[in-house]
Image 1 (tube, one colour):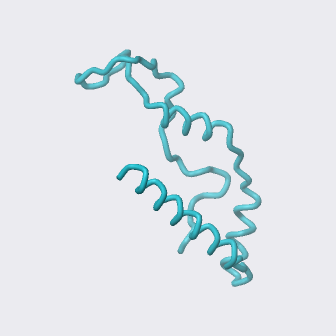
Image 2 (cartoon, rainbow, N blue to C red):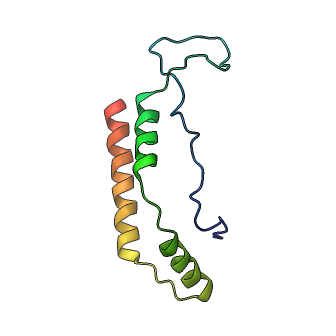
Length: 98
């Protein structure tokens, strides 16, 4: 995997909705300047998390350098635990919706 995103700038995942007016009604019309839009609670939570998260450019650069030099060591136990947790969560979510 290549990591080529410029260091110091986090990847842009979501556009900022800070200036958008949030409405509780839906409209089938296209959104234009001044139009009120409805933003889901999930998107609002992601926006809040994104704006409050910190980005450590120095840490990212040190990891990137370690990978390039072949010194980066993967904690396989931690990766395995995360994979098992993710699989268990997926199974639980599917059994709740079924």
